[in-house]
Length: 101
Image (cartoon, rainbow, N blue to C red; front, side, top):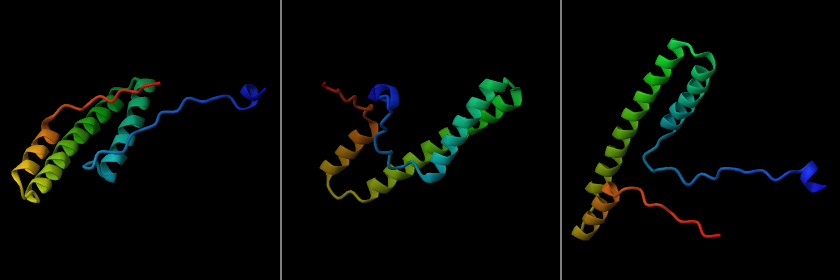
């Protein structure tokens, strides 16, 4: 009876945001998603070109924001141990988390 009136719903839980992603970048990401849906539905070349323009802009903004974030962290480092930890953090591939049920 409960499943009929209040069925279980799958939701996507997002982890905390990366420190260098600003609100303006989040807004552009949301706009890119909306433009993608519009371009897929309409198949208009103008919508695709607008989507690609925003996508390239986001890529540029993310690279610049990440570089500024790590440059700021490097200026605050006092020890070599902290320096190498930050180098590892900046260059290491994203670590996969394993979910155990």
